[in-house]
Length: 356
Image (cartoon, rainbow, N blue to C red):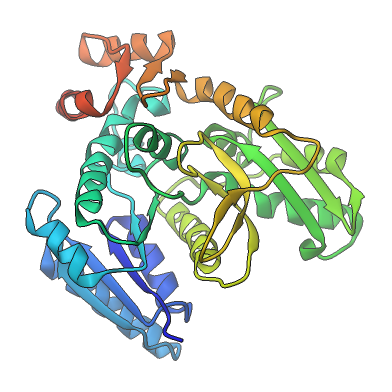
């Protein structure tokens, strides 16, 4: 049986880190790398070919031009006919925002920089009318449900809820003197939680979440709660993209599997935040322990949005910002924004970029 084809669109730091990881994964026979610059795409592809080849992996890796503003985009998608598409575009990535000396916004204040491009990708992928499953990795906890509630959207995201899991497994295992693989963690959490868990300065107040831990069937949730709140120095710099690429590799492995795997994923279709999920090459399904209802999990992640600067996301995908975010917009731009939707994203992003 042939292995699937992966198309990586947008070649920022995260996509490049993921390319290098999947080139060594033995998951794909063919990996296509797309960028506005054909030279950049070919160069990144060749870098992966050499590095993976040194380690004994030789998938077919191609670099091609993919310009989101060109009508050939959808035609090229149909020609490649990938099984999986990965994209993480942004007009200004988080690590560059961290270097600005301007008035800072709550995290969601920069959302238009992601939504503007992701909505364009959505339209082009939809036009192509292909069977591929789409992983959207630009602030997936929020961007993915915005897109899904207003039309076609990504099937899931990567990162965020996945990334505190190793800290929890390792910490519980250390306390119980067992192997981390014996520790089962189930976590419902929105993007904001990660920055409190992976941090050497842990406060008393955390964004809402649900957490369950078991070891060989024995409940160890109280211990996991303690581990969750332990200080954990973590460098939020360019190396963080390698961590998220590892989360992406776990997601891709599950999405390529003929058997169901239990992992965590953010941005599953219209659902805000991240959840435990059962995933295979034919399903992506939220999978909660029996003591948690889906309504309870949804409510927890919706309440966590305020920690990112969002009051609520309406059923049509419109975002209402908190008053704090609105005041921060005014300090930075001299004007405020109360809401964001797909039709207003481009104009809002232009004003942000001009100010930054």
